Image (cartoon, rainbow, N blue to C red; front, side):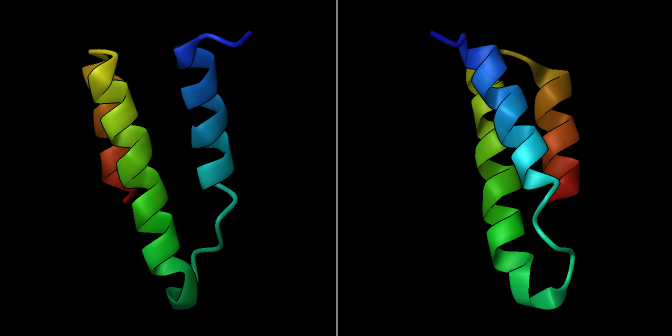
Length: 55
């Protein structure tokens, strides 16, 4: 079983694969917001800032 940190690292890597074109902007923003919130729940402020700066 994967730890929450491992799952968030996987989610972060998957979020980087979303194309940067305008059509995918909502999907990309939602993904990075979810990753950022996940890091906040684990009290990892640097991870949250990293993710929210990408949104």
